[in-house]
Amino acid sequence: MPAILKGYFDRVWRPGVAYELPADGGVIKPALLNIRRMGVVTTCGSPWWYTELYMQNPGRKVLCHSP
Image 1 (tube, rainbow, N blue to C red):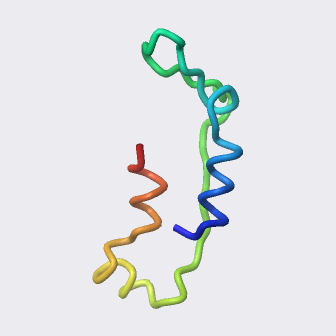
Image 2: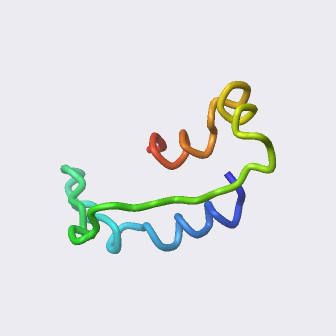
């Protein structure tokens, strides 16, 4: 993931804004309950088949499956 995009997520989607972290280490509670759908548009600088087959879609992995 590009550093600028990672910096955006680190600053905007942070504790207290996007979710609440309990002090006792309990379950994380979502804070943005009014958002139902989110879209992401990105380019990789390569053909779609190369990104899907050889790179295994790294952008989707990071945005959908990162802790």
